[in-house]
Image: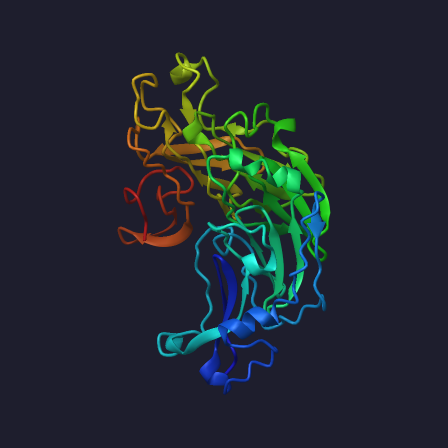
Length: 385
């Protein structure tokens, strides 16, 4: 039987295989035992640098053998964010035979790695790209577990991350020969896909005023690459900052939209008229993009203050909502609110999902939270399945 692979990530990135179907010979040089697999990938980067400058640490040999791996190219598997991997080799009859082929313990590879990793690994051309909570990026050969490269931010930059409300990172985007990541301190990083060397890093505050740790913002989401642009959201809504979505050109990280799409009005306007502490509406999970229509869908968090609404009257539109915009321009198409005037910190946080569904006997393209991607007209109240 053809060997089948899958990936998983948290504190470690693992390749799984139908070991019983191969007679125990993986032909990858990696061990199925936990201790041996750590050793097999230890030649990756036990030498990771703690120097004050950003580092890309290649391993030896820096080769890719993962020709059997299908791509899992973006957060949510595809731009529609379906989270569905259409692989058929692993079935209900053989899933019990899955076993560990290799694993990589990030904390063994670099002592600066902290607990609390939430990364969503992606696989492109036989390489697994996975991040840590502290904005380190690891690239592994998907079949052998050998480390291809490793990048970490400068020590003085990483030392500022503790100012954020949460230290987390949910993954990377890959496109145009680069690996893109957002850092806790509100910077967008582009790394060389083959070597891990830093291509460019920009401060979001250079193009969006006030987007700093000191201002209450931080970044935890995974960016998304689509048609030459890198799309990002924002975190920090519980701190009272205004949530936003923005797009940057993958070629040079300059803004691709005329302005960000803001999920709450400017201070002093509408329901932000009375208090500097009002705001919210963070977009802290990646969007979904319909490649047929070019429309992007994203879910928006709660308004702030979270549990007291007297100073933010009305429905607080766009918060706790699914919002659709033109991916090329950021222009609003529609928005549907799930909870008006939220007093419970509920959020509409999970990334929307674009799928083809049968609703009341009719086949329709649907977003998982608002039914019709074209108009937002609900087909089912919360999910079309």
